Length: 325
Image (tube, rainbow, N blue to C red; front, side):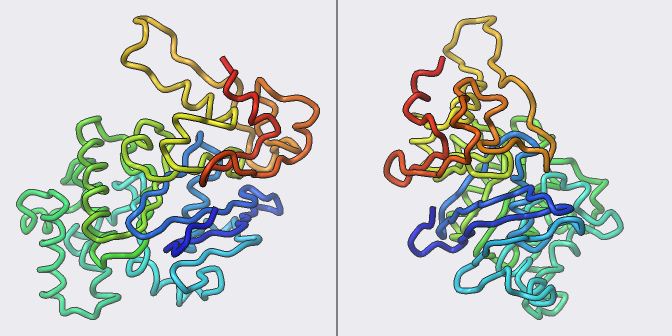
């Protein structure tokens, strides 16, 4: 569902591996200063969708259809050399594994400086000064000293802050955060999420947040796309997605969230079955093999239709979802 004046607009995106469409028919958009969360279980295509926005798909995967626009530019029409000028400057990504994403042989300050040297043509001394200032902004204590350290000398939370500083150093118009709090303890998670919100407000970036944590979504997002089997099955404002889920998968996802006011020793809800392997989705609705509402209608691909203001769901049984246990 496209937003007027969207900074990022994805239309009918398809991503294929070995001829199989792993991601199919994905359309979404996010405006400057807004946070869009893409949620779903592992294997649903969230990270592939995010990587395609920056032309970072693995070699085996390719965009098989659709368009990705950033502002007035069609990113899917750019060459690799042109995309290299976009990455780090106009659009940046925070990866979910900072230790694996940082170069272990480079001091972290030099890694934060890199984008400035490449895209802004600053002198090394000016870039270093700006890098230290940005490291301070993201909450790194004694940034001048930390800039001289290597990734293995820092904690996981500190490395994630270095990743965020690297992503924000050029004040990009699009920031992608791919599971930015994975493997961090809950205190550091809360700090990182608050940091993303604060910097979104300061820089005015459009933010795409990839996560499977519905608690993070409730706390941070403005809009939500629920993804399953490489397709978006429900999308809308975060309040409506939580208060009035209209797709069975979203309803079941929300039911798995622990409730602080619930009865003690209550077993956590789970979704029966597992996400099918990519490329082996069932025909029709891809959730139908796990869905308690599935019937013969679900052998046909459901259309994504409005179920409220700016709220859409792709299910043959949107009128029955509210009655699910």
